Length: 248
Figure (tube, helix red, strand yellow):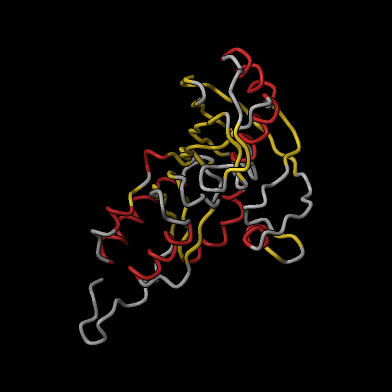
């Protein structure tokens, strides 16, 4: 389809499908959804699994009738590339928050590896205050902005594997495979607390969500070059991504 020259806008996009987007840093997950809705005039758009603004990587987006699969796709396991920075604590458990404590890092690489391994498996994790979890109808981050901190119920998660890819203390890069609902910021905070020196999430990139891989994702810059017709062709080409993901 092309722009309607009489109305100076695109006709409503009536297609349906799934798109994997490589979310850039500085964009919220909703920014990606809003961009697609406005650029291609799509009434129904949703995403499956929120990424923080500072994070990058795989964001699964559903369009049209495929929005009914959002919950199923959100429940998939995730894989992340993470950077942990020891010696610092913040109120948000990442570098975006206010520093609340700084400590000398005396842990050895061997001690850090031992602590990382101790977090593998089934466990209970408490969501951070700076999160979209709702308590009493209020999102935690809304309360955090007002300086309010409340008790949060721990939730069951599974850390399937933690594999270190670079050790350069106070930083450590690792690949994480985990279940739905895992907060990597909280994991980094808890690792730092267990080591006794504090820790924060310094960088995060999602590379897999269920059957979907970052290698198949399109960038926002590429989407900006497409008109509505070529966007429809892109969606049609991406239908192969559904093979084996259990969606009909």
